[in-house]
Picture 1 (cartoon, helix red, strand yellow):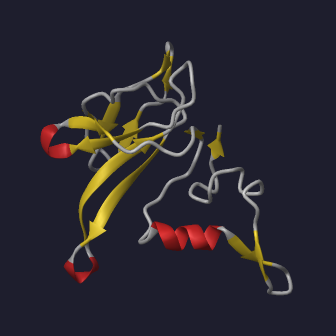
Picture 2 (picture 1 turned 90 degrees about the vertical axis):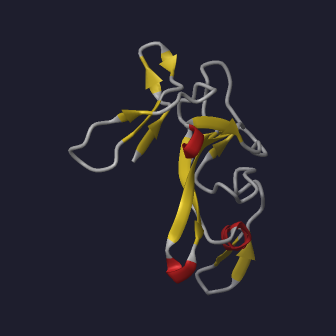
Length: 142
């Protein structure tokens, strides 16, 4: 379990900490390069043989640095105990939910259409998806 960023007495934080199991001590990680309140994070892992997952990467994206909403992404490189810049988001993002999915394209197709009460498929406009391009359906894009 990792906690990255947040808000403290003096504004957004760049700190990060992890804990392996309940009852253990929190371990400090290298601070992120940017302060982030209201950011999202997820572990991006690739499936290995037997359906197990291997070598996940912690990614933190979006948030608010005290002055502006962010579209930046940081990935923690565990072997080197450092953060590196990832690809920017298409827009600034705060207060979103994140999870890893098998295929981003299947996620986009699933969130861009819905069924009406009679079972018919209807396409949602980008305005109904808050301009998020269907990638972050529960987040706020600024």
